[in-house]
Amino acid sequence: MHNVERLVAGRKRLLLLDTDVAGYARSQGKTPVTFGPTDLVCCRTLQGHTGKVYSLDWTPERNRIVSASQDGRLIVWNALTSQKTHAIKLPCAWVMTCAFSPSGQSVACGGLDSVCSIFNLNSQTDRDGNLPVTRMLSGHKGYVSSCQYVPDEDSHLVTSSGDQTCVLWDITTGLRTSVFGGEFQSGHTADVLSISINGSNSRMFVSGSCDSTARLWDMRVASRAVRTFHGHEGDVNSVKFFPDGNRFGTGSDDGTCRLFDIRTGHQLQVYYQPHGDNDVPPVTSIAFSISGRLLFAGYTNGDCYVWDTLLAKMVLNLGSLHNSHDARISCLGLSADGSALCTGSSDTNLKIWAFGGHRRVI
Picture 1 (cartoon, rainbow, N blue to C red):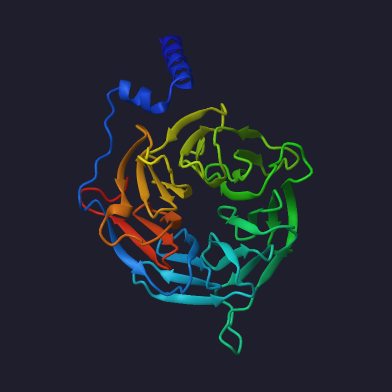
Picture 2 (cartoon, rainbow, N blue to C red; picture 1 turned 120 degrees about the vertical axis):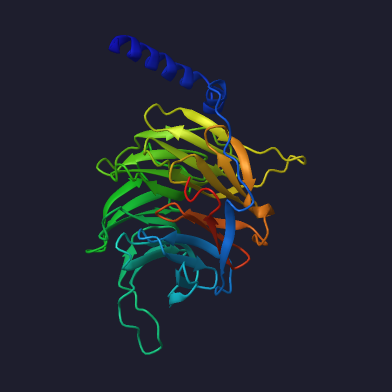
C-alpha cells in the first residue's frame, strides 16, 4: 500500500513540475480566497517622516516597527498606539534599508555610505538628544541595499550591496565572516538589491539582483551559490522566503512576482496582472501571509495587490481601498503573528492594515 501511495505522490510531483501550481490547484477544485469589506482594513496611519519611506521592519514580538526615510531618520513606532519611541538622526542621511534585531534591542540600517550602522535602543542619547552608533560594519564597496539579522541571533547580520556581493557580519567584532559573490563565478553580476534568510534553516538565504536572477546561498559555503534562479526580465527588487522554507517569492521591475522551489530550482508560479496600456508597474516589495496562502506585493503606482498564491489570482487591491497611500509603495512587511500588514510609501506615511471580520490571520 505504501508503495502505491509513494507512486501516486511521485506522479503528482511530476505533474507539478510540468504545470503551474494554479492550473493544478484549479484542477483539484480549489477556489480563491475572498475578501469582505472588513476583512483587511487600514486601521492606523503612522505620520512623522518628512521624506519618502524607503524601508520598514517589524520586531519579532509583533508590536513595534522601525522605518527608514529619505529624511535621514529611523523612527521606531509602537504599532498599537502609533507612538514614536525613538527618532534616530543618522550620520548619513542616504539610508535605504533598516532591520530590527531578533531581541528587539537594536536596529540596523544601511545606504549610500556603504556602511551598515547598528544602534542599541537602550543606549544613552548624547547632549543633542541623538542616539550614538553602537557599531559600524564597514567593508562593502557599494551602497548597502538590504540588511537582515540572522534569526535568534543579535550577533550576526547579512547585508546585500551594489558591489554585487552579500556579506555575513559578526556584529560583536564588526568583522566580515563571509563574502558571497564578488570574484566568485557563481555570484551576482550586478547590484544585489534584496535578501531573505530562511526561517526554517537560518544557514540558507536568497538574494535578488539587477542581473534579473535570484540566488540561493549557504552561509557555510561562501565560495559558490547553491543555485541560480532565472525567469525575470528585469531587476529583482524583493525576495522573501515562503513560510515553509522550501520556496521563495520574488518581485521585479518586469511587473511580475514569481514563486520558486529551492529544491528543484523550478519556477512554480507567475503572479501578473495585465494592464490595458501594456505599461506594467514594477514590483517594489513583497511579503507572504503567515500560512503562505496570500502574497502581498507593492507597486510603483501605489497599488498593493493581495494575491492568492495557490490560484495566482489577485483577490484584493489595497490601493483601491479607502485611506490608501497617495504614491508609490516602497516597502511592506507582515507582523510576526500574521495579524497585520504594514506598508511604507513615497507619500512619507506608513499604514497598518489589520485582518478583521471573520478572519484574524490567513
